[in-house]
Amino acid sequence: MKTPLVSINILSHNRKNCLKQTLNKVFEQNYKNIEVIVVDNNSNDGSVEMIEKEFNNVEVIYLEKNIGASALNISFKKSKGEYILILDDDSYPIANTIEEGLMSFKQKNNIKIVSFNIFNTNTNRSQTDYFIENELSFIGCGVMIKNDLLKMLNGFSEHYFIYHNELDLSIRTLNLGFKIKYLPNTAVIHDQKGQANIIVSKFRYSNYMKSYLIFFIRNISCKYSCLHIIKWIINRFLICFKYPYFFVFIKSLGYVIVNFNRIYKSKQSIKKKYQKLYLNKIPFVDRDYFPNFKKPSLKLFY
Image (cartoon, rainbow, N blue to C red):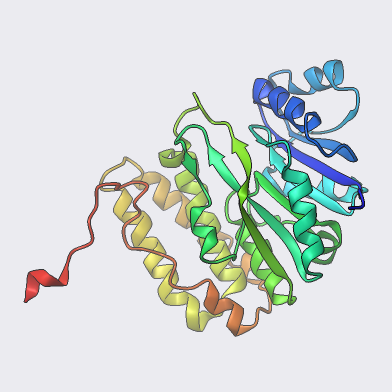
């Protein structure tokens, strides 16, 4: 197999020790024709200084403001590789990940995104099991994307600070007639062991809520989106009965309302057949926040 240049883009913010581990793991990969670019979102923990001291073969882009996931767009423009591997500062690929990803791209010309099995060391389980049934998205801490696709789509939308920017890029990819391939047997380790449980944090709750609403406004027609937006708002509101997030709920909803015109003006022209693939994914009750919830059985009524 040919060995095209792979650009490894790493998004970093205030996790110096995790970033150091990730960089070491990257250079332990079997695949050696790589360039490594770190985009630092205004870290103040010495991350940049660590890279400059210990990894002189890594290019660092330091931003004076944390702009979230769209910071990767800056590194995309600098990347020379035909393929781009995206990682977080706390995620790293196992030894043969890049090789397996490249082989998948070679199978079909219309595959533009290859997503990997993301194994989380905090929960000791895969974050991507459900991708086997529908290859409609990816997780941004472990994915390979063809550089030409990122140029066609201008990278991640700046409307998303974090979360669901992957969903937005995915639906736009399918809309162009390209495919996403999931590799369940090739892993990226999301090493969150010892970190706080971000799943039920206010930060995730707020950004998850805003980003999903933005996704529907930007990509789904009013005909399909209205009921789903209402369902999503109910889903988020129910969480406030268990967690003290009512103020966060109001603030997050208010953000989307205030910015509605700006978001709506960026609306994508997505074919209906692709819009429908992303519908009916919202439960009324989020099992991340209510893990013991059991769906009522109709057997109770007859």
